[in-house]
Length: 129
Image 1 (tube, rainbow, N blue to C red):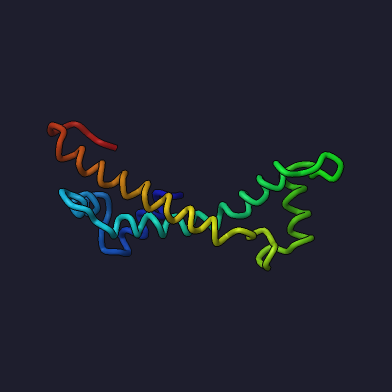
Image 2: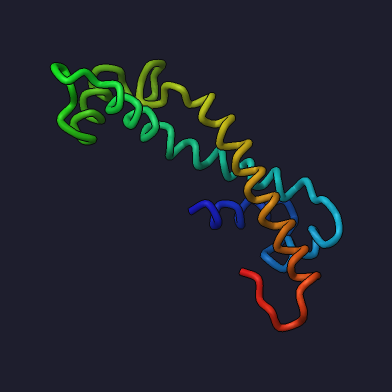
C-alpha cells in the first residue's frame, strides 16, 4: 500500500514513475520525493491510528476488566467512545500523523536517493530494486 500511495503522490508532483524519480534524484537532492513520502505517511496514519489505539488499550488493560480480544476491544471502544469523535478510535491521530509524515518522508527520501546513487555507481547490467 505504501509504495502504491507513494507512486501516486510522486506522479501527482510531476516526478513521474520510477524512471522519473530516478532522473530527478540523480546527483542532487529532490525535496518533492520527501514531500511525496510525507503525504504517503499521512494516508498511512488514517489506517494505522485505530490499530495503534487498540494495541495500546490491549497492552494497558487490567485483568479484571480486560477485553476478550481485538474484536471485542474495537467494538467496545467504538460503542463507548465513538469512531471519529474526540476520544474515539482516532484519539492521537494528530501525533500519529506527524510521526508517520516524518518517518515516511525520511524513508522514501533515503530510499529513492540511495537507489539513484547505486544505479549511477554500479556497473551496467546490475539491477537495483
